[in-house]
Image (cartoon, rainbow, N blue to C red):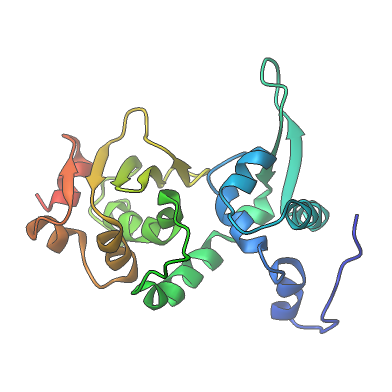
Length: 220
């Protein structure tokens, strides 16, 4: 294992940054919040990272108890990386960073890569707020559910109130609701500039599904 670099400050923020302050670390956490991933899949969804840096960051994350590496049972027999409980605890950090960084997405640069599932973490608290359990103050009491989100760039799905993993890349097998929208609408939704209800009324968001979660999203 590589030697830990440290700020050598008796401060909770400094200690946290000792583990996650290096470039790429939190983006690797973002990817692993979708569940176990192979090294090659991680590299494909982190455009710009070199293989050496990715391998080094993963080793650092294993050392700091943020992630672990394990072998899948046959017939897969492949090695995957997944978050530990400590690593999964970074979800609120990522959602807060996404909210803070949302204004910087108003203009997409020509060099910007994009993956549909990168919108999952910032969108999760918006949808979770609509579907929170009754009496929680978060929503309309629809409880757990899976929402599939379709953008021009691809599809992903988020799991509401159901534990880990919190989202998945690609379409869901049997979603409780399906949202169809474009990336700009998803950005506005995640950043708080647009509500689901307003997006549906304006025709910018299409909601399908017959269950209570879909009805809440449609404002019924």
